[in-house]
Length: 232
Image (cartoon, rainbow, N blue to C red; front, side):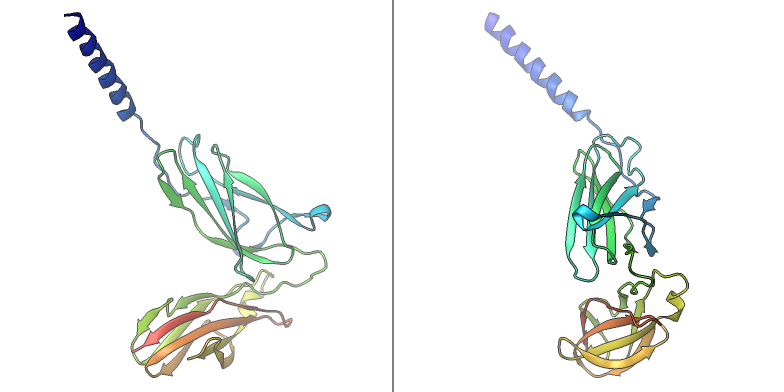
């Protein structure tokens, strides 16, 4: 009889433990609305002579109504070299300092992850770091919209569409673009000094590569990434 009571007690203890773990809940995640540096801006930064760079403060809104236990991953991409670095910020902290290269265009986004492993990615922004000796900044590398990467499109008129921005006030409207297009990589110059952010080209079947060179009125230029697509 003692053995039966003992085993029954163990079963009750095990059952109560399992129900406690089932009651654990995690706060849902949502995308924060505030981010700094602002998109398409020249960010403010502190020149750090000893580190030979620009110290930039990144900050964002909370991704949860209860931020404790939230881990944020800041992903930074150098748009000139496509070099990517990630910084992990734990315990619900919503800011961090990062030393970056001066006079450089970057893209950044923040991913929030809760204790359950759920994650959500915030909006993507781009900015330019300041540089004392520069009175004019290079344009941001163009964002290629269409054709999308590895797309298949019909033969005939193909519409190339992109987005361009310049960190200098008033210069985005004055940017011009060169379309590089061809069946080899890297492609060759196809159309120079386009005043709009789109161009239509008649193409036969084949595999093509393209990128955009952005130019400002001061002779500064930047280059987008290269995309490939197929015409059938």
